[in-house]
Length: 233
Image 1 (spheres, rainbow, N blue to C red):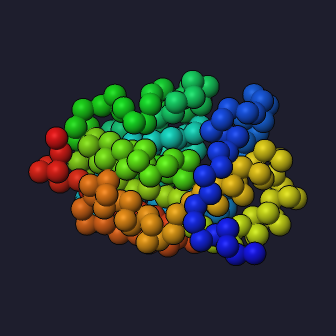
Image 2 (image 1 turned 180 degrees about the vertical axis):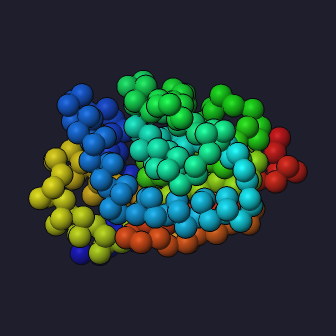
């Protein structure tokens, strides 16, 4: 019963294959807003990025969200960082999602996360949420390195922890509140995720220094670190 949790699933999610309708995608975006709020992404950011930002005393931070979806987490950040001079940018490969990010204080950019269209150290911090498990190790390492390239201080990667408890709890609760697309892809997301040790090793292989992996609320892990100047090409 628990053998399937010993190693990552390599089965692709429908979100990755594009096998979904526009209606399913719109509803998925709406459901993700609630998942971010109730299941821990907001709390994970508050206990990691926001905590470090306050400790660093950055007055006008520039923050990048890679794989930002509709930009919900970025908009939440603007309520915590009450400074109109700050810069909040969200990147998305999907054109519709990239357009939906734009508000008065948040900018959306359509681009490939592996080739971010920004110079070195363009931002103070960069983060991504529930994105890494969509990637195999080689691409995940490239993403980590690329995020570290554009962030001068630290990057944060929020993802799921591969566990039986999380998987079966999500299946049980989700069947009552989520569409079939979100339920099936979300369950597979857990199976495709990494453990704390796997995530730490991946960060180190991606060139991160001062690596930490911490637990946050319900089945969320936060990998953080930075790439020093001498570690950049």
